[in-house]
Image (cartoon, rainbow, N blue to C red; front, side, top):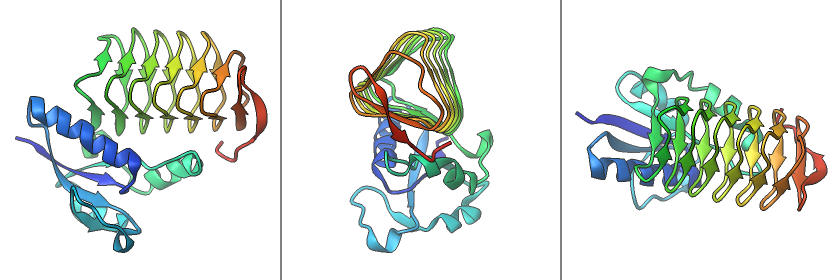
Length: 218
C-alpha cells in the first residue's frame, strides 16, 4: 500500500522531487502525492498536484501522511534548518527519495527527508545527512561526508574523502578536490573548482575557488 506524501514548499526543488517520486512509482507504487504546502499558496498556481494550503496545515496531516520538506535556493539556503525545524519531523513522518536511475553503493548511507535525483552516483562509504537535496547528475565519491541541510546543485563532482559541513550550498557544476573540508554554512559558487579547505560561513567562487565574501548561513 502506497504512503500518502505531501511536499513543501511549491518550489523548484520540491517539483523536481515530485518527478523522482513519480519515477519510483513507475517501478513500484510507493507514495501517493496529495499535493504541496506553501505559505504563499494563494498567489501560486499548480498544474500538477493541488496546493493544499500553508505550512500550518501539516498539523492536520501528521500521522496520516509523510512530509518531504525541501526548501532552499542560493539566496535562501541559510534559512533551511529553521524552516524545516518548524515541522519537527522524524524518520516515521518523512521520506528518503532516491530516483531509480541513481547508482547507490550498498555501503552508502542516506539520512531522512533527503532526496537524490536522477542520474546521480553515490559511491562506497559515502554519507549524506538528513534534510539534504542532491540535484541531478551529481557524483558523491567514496568516503565523502555531507552534513545535515546540505543542498548540492546538478553536475557537481564531490571527490573522495570530501567533508561538507551542515547547512552548506554547493552550486551546479562545482568540483571539489579529494579530501577538501567545507565548513558549516559555506556557499560554493556555480562552476567553482575547490582545491583547498573552505572556512565556515565563507562564500567561494572561481577557478580555483577563492573566498569572495561571507554568508550568514552558519
